[in-house]
Length: 306
Image (cartoon, rainbow, N blue to C red; front, top):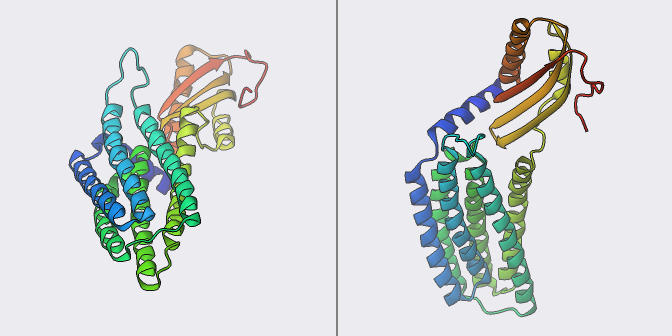
């Protein structure tokens, strides 16, 4: 198993055990709520669509980050009789909702910006810059607070992307404010809005695609040909087929397969089970393994049964 893959799995396990810091989340939510109010008031007073769009974006972030935290807490609940796989998908659902909301908001902002292109409005560039600078500083603090938790948690990463996009948005608004203040080019305000929205869409789509893959139980990203080759080298194994794999979150992989074996006693088969399970967990980072032993039972020996 490559060292970086192994380290990633270890860090993901440690992260999952440690959870997300409630104190850091509290400060991030408080900072975003403050930015939202400041930009909303500043946008209305200055007439800046870019500032109002950033305020709307920050409001969605405040809700999204709080949702991410509660989803993280729910995901750590132990398994029970009704949720035998546990509650890990709560974070994936939260990440999907957060990123989908970002996509919708971004499309709405593009529509509003196009309308503003047709009917440009006067904008107070100085006020626009002042409020955007406040937002930028607060966003940078929020990014710093969530940076560590974003590495191995798709749910928190979705919220982290919100904050990164906010930071980029603030920079764009500042640049737009400078252009408006110096040259009086007011159409730059909707232009900045569209650029911010397109950037957000590009980032949010990655998370949406990943969460949809997990929710649809798409196969985990594994080298199945290598797995087949290595397992079929083991003594007593004739063939591995009908493989299924899926993920409950970005760190937990489930794997099941039929193993065609030579005829042997059950206690001997158990030893091969242990050998295969150890290989899958250590070399491929698979969390849960389910194997079905067979002796010339299945006619179809394809690795995937379609």
